[in-house]
Every structure is written in C-alpha cells, then in structure tokens.
Image 1 (cartoon, rainbow, N blue to C red):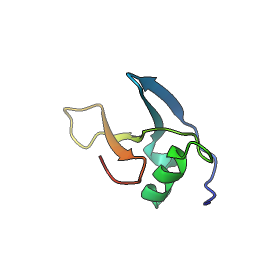
Image 2: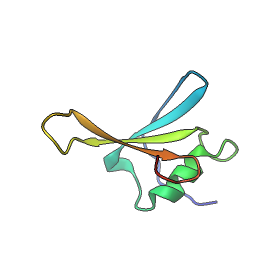
Image 3: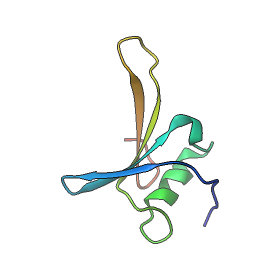
Image 4: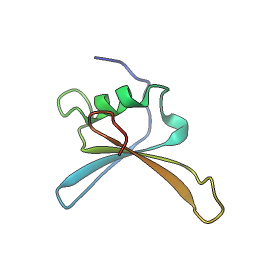
Length: 75
C-alpha cells in the first residue's frame, strides 16, 4: 500500500457509477498509482473512475477533465 498526502476531494455517483473528483494542483506525480489507490474499495475511497480537473487549455472551455479508470489506465 502506498501513502499519499491528504487532499480535498468530492465523491459523486450516478446511474450505478461513482467518481472521485480532485483538482489538478492536488494530484501526485504517479497518477496511475494514485488512481488505483483511490479506487480501491478496501483501502482507498472506492470509486469506478478518478476525475482530475485542471484549467482549460483552450479559450472555448472552462476546465479540462482527465479521467482515469480504477486500474490506473486513462479513459
């Protein structure tokens, strides 16, 4: 089990899925390991996917959202 620094998050659910949302400035360097840890329903928060919100890279959008599956892969 890996230890990560405390961070602010929100957990939401809908239509049978649950998600943990964090701000991009809070995420650790190894996001795949972090996603696996957070998704673990025994030792982490437990979720289907991790959503990482960051500032938009284009003027047409308000935010950018990166989605990681529970196995650490990018959706």
